[in-house]
Image (cartoon, rainbow, N blue to C red):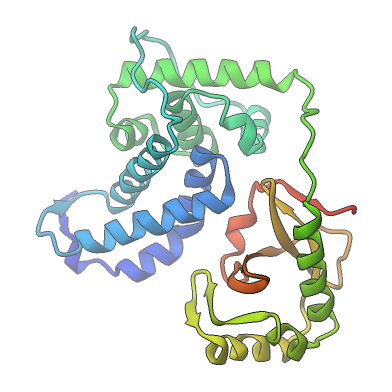
Length: 296
């Protein structure tokens, strides 16, 4: 395949198609759907900056995953959680495709469990067994030799099989009383469609990110956001947690016992709502998240 200049690619269409898949990789690498979206946004900024380059690229999708992979590693280094990336021994072994049952089991593995794997094992298993990349693609994205990828993949799969036999009884921390009070007040007013009461809760310089869609700043702009919610009825808000963080879970009112369809994050400053992060237009982010309805 002849190299294709990046400038000739419809990058917006490509990113719209790949964004859920890129997020799935980032979230499992860093152990959180929320941090995974932050890593993805950082990676996309880097990718857009590279459009100014004249360097040709053969595989655009692989190029984007390489950027996302390196961005995830940078994130892990900043958190001081980076582990040794290269195996001391490169054992030549067969890295066959798993059968359907094993593939589904690994794809359903929790983010917390993936985080128990060393980085190289985590990355190789996610790329091949969750996202369906070939060995050659995994080598290219990770910048590893074929024997190193095979070794990491074999060890990662072995570790996950061992983890699967362990009870997952780690207690989930509950919401603090302050978080519960604030979120319950917001949820109560929102579900009652009392958006005037919510507007009284927000700071004058409030910032809102409608992820994958737009950003709004200031009470006047953000008020339009609440107006848009008043015109639709496909939501019901519940106080809870996402990956252990205080959050608002959004359910389909026609399926109240189903899984949440997306979520919102709020941050406060001096008892005023300072930031809102709404994932309505990035529903892929909740894939694999540990969502807990608050029972307090």
